[in-house]
Structure formats: structure tokens, C-alpha cells
Image 1 (cartoon, rainbow, N blue to C red):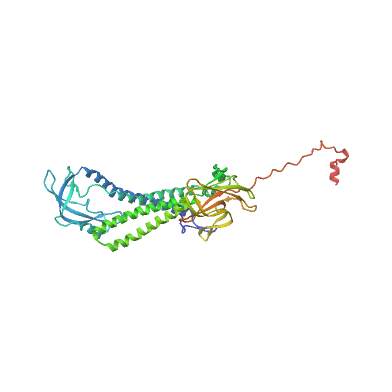
Image 2: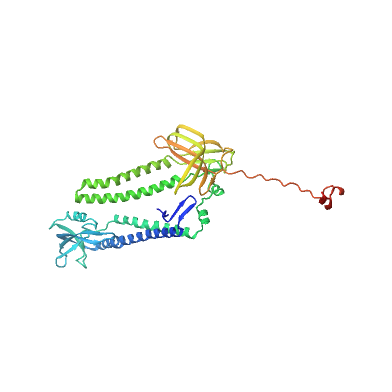
Length: 445
């Protein structure tokens, strides 16, 4: 979601044009608009459709069944949220158990409100004059009756759209207010990631074979979680559209038009499921991977022992372990933000082909690594970073190759303490009185 307004505040290198105050005000108004739009949409969905339908479904459990007959049909116009909606209605005649025959109009169980008159008329095509229908009426108010009992659960998914607008607007408004109240220095401090000893504290986990267990870089896991949530949401909404299209197809008979509308949704959903399955098998499909080392943090020129512990069962085409150093820089090109990544160092520590891993116990592989003497130190700031990592590339026999990285911390060696030079006091030194110059003599010199 865009939270900047280039027409009001534009950045070109170190120069800004426009008014900062107007830009912040426009950003706050934009987020408030999202909140209001979502709140109005949710209120309309609840009060006009969802809650009345749920209330009627609960009350219809106590209605009495009766045999009715269709007398007439019509399409009425009702005001909707954005435009008028068309509602199909039937004039039904039925006889209650205790009372005279009743003739009244009803829309409950006939069809749904729709912005298309043709769709509303298509919902009435399955009813003909003098057709017998089942109906249920309220014993206390016989004029109130329905043609179908129970409620629909799928319209509640419509709330996903307005609720997501409200959540996104509230989050954006909070961020905008925080930026308005904070100074530039505080915003820079908040945006800058932690570095140095904080990285070491995150990696202080004991290993089972060696002293330290390295954490797995979780970037792929977060991306996979986001893709899974998006895939589930898309396929649920696409399934509802397909369900409605199939229901309309049984009424209208427009097979070609329905297939043309449904095919892109179904194809996109299938592609997302396939991509999610492929990425899931790449990230964690074969088994857990652990890397342990005997010393941490490391220093340039320092050597240490490491061990790879790979779980799973099956044949592996390739298993390699490498020491990698990457440099990243975030910069502005015109008004666009870009990130450049350069691999500064790579050396392969171990490589195996045609490996068979037994599922009864993990496969353990020992290796040694040495940080180069001229290698850069691990560094991370708001715009630049130097990252060391142990990269494990695993290629199962019937799956794509899965790279997994384990970050390392490389720090400078501790400074060597310089001993203080001994101080000689004049009273302790054996100096002849004649060797000491008087102030008058120093002045003459």
C-alpha cells in the first residue's frame, strides 16, 4: 500500500521538493479514508444482508410448513451501497393450518439481490405460473413466510474485504502518526537494524555435537508463510465465485460465458497451489538441516571446525557446503529505491554426489572453515550490510535444489593492551646536583 505522495513530497537524492506538512496530512487523510471505507462497507454488509439473513434463518427454525402455489412474479429495485440492486420476488398463495388462505409477496428463497436485472430475471425462470412450492410461515404472523429454511454461510466471506481495509488503514494511520511525532534522528534510529553484539546474542544456542548451533536464515520461511496465506485466500474467494457461477449456470444455461469467466480464476488458483508446493518442498521438503561450529563469533584468519547434520530419507543428487560473504547496498536511483547485492567471497568446503541418506539416523558431515585474513567484518546498517554465512545446497533426487543459509558473525580481534611506560621520579634517580640546570640557565639557553 502506498504511503507516500510524490506530488506533495518528492525526494531526489538529498533534496526534497514540496511541503512536508502537506505530505504528512495527505498520508493521514489517505489512511482515514481506508478506515472509513472499510467501516461503511462492513456496516452495510452486516446491517443490510448478513445479520437480517442470520436472524431470519434462526427464526425460521420454528416456522410451520405449508403447501403453496405461485401466482405471479416480478423484479423490484432496492437501493444498494453503490448502485441500485434488483431483487426477484414471487407472489405465493398458501393456506395456514388455522386460518384463511394468504396471498403475499416474498423474496426469501427465490434469489439474491444483484446489480443486474438480467440475472434477477434469470432467477425467476425456474418458477412458472401455478407451480406448487413448499413454504414455511410464522405461526404468529402468517404473512411472513419463506421458501427455503436455513442460512448461507459463504456471504460472510464478503467481510474479508472491508475488514482488511480497516486493518490496513489503522496500521497505516499508526505509522503515519508515529512518523509525525518522532524526530528525524529517532526515525533513523528506529529504522536501523541491530548489529554487532546483538547478532551474537541471537546465535547463542548450544549444539548437540559442537559448542554452537547456527540459526537458519528465516527469510524464506516468512515469504512462504505469506504465499500460503495469499494462496488460501485467493482459492477460497475463487471457489465462492465458481460456486455462484455454477448455480447461475443451472439457471441461465450460458456455458461458454460462465467458463470464460471462471477459467482465469481457476487457472490462477492452480498455478498458486503449484508454486506454493514447489517452494515448500524446496524450503523444508526433504528434512531438517542443522549446522554447528565449535567457536563463535569468528575473527579474520581464524579456523574452526563445523558439522552438518542432515535429516530425512532418500537419495540426494548433490550436497555441498560453502562459506559465503555477500555485500548489499540500498541506494536511490532517481526517485526509485534499489538494493544491489555482490558476492565478495565464496569457497566450497565440501561436496558429495549420489548420497543415500538413511531415515533411521541423521547424516553427519564434518568440515573445516577459515575466515580469510583480508576478509571484511560482518556489518549491518540502515543502507549497507556485509553478511557471512555457511550455505548448504541440497538437491534431492526428485525435487528442486534447496539452498539454506546459516549466518555467521565475524568480528575484529580484541585490541591488545599496551603496557604503561615506567615513570622515573627525580627523587629516585641518582643525579648529581650539578647536572640539574637552574631556571636562569634554561632561560639563557
